[in-house]
Length: 163
Ligand SMILES: [Zn+2]
Image (cartoon, rainbow, N blue to C red; front, side):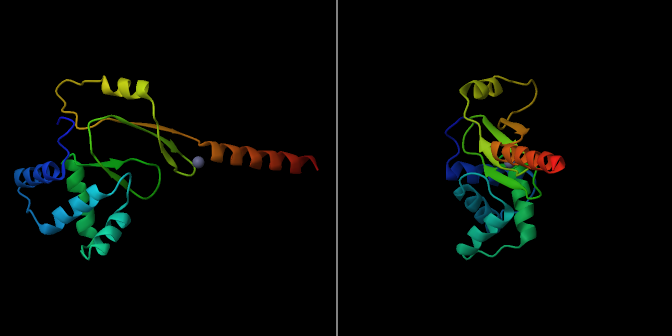
């Protein structure tokens, strides 16, 4: 896909083709979920998606939400992030630019890494016989807040032992 083909119409067409190719029904629920998912900037959970649909007075069951987001991931229209929390996070795909994230293993805080060098490196990988839909790099570790909280705790423990 080239960069400017993520219009609302193009996204709906892509989903329509995916459903047709897989012999799946083109229900209005599925397209309402797609529209709602593409209205959200940044990452979201199934609960966030359900809230938005409820505000639009669109009632869909949780299982329909789970099934449809799975289909949108398979159709290369949604990213399912492997963040280290118990809640699954999704994100719409709006362009072909590579994305990089920093994830804290303790508080699960996610931050975008804004590095042109890193983006260029991720973008330069062109595998053979594998159609790339999008490129994402994850860097796991400890955020400064958790790092300083840990150091503070350690200091307290050491101090209490000396008393
Ligand atoms: Zn943290």
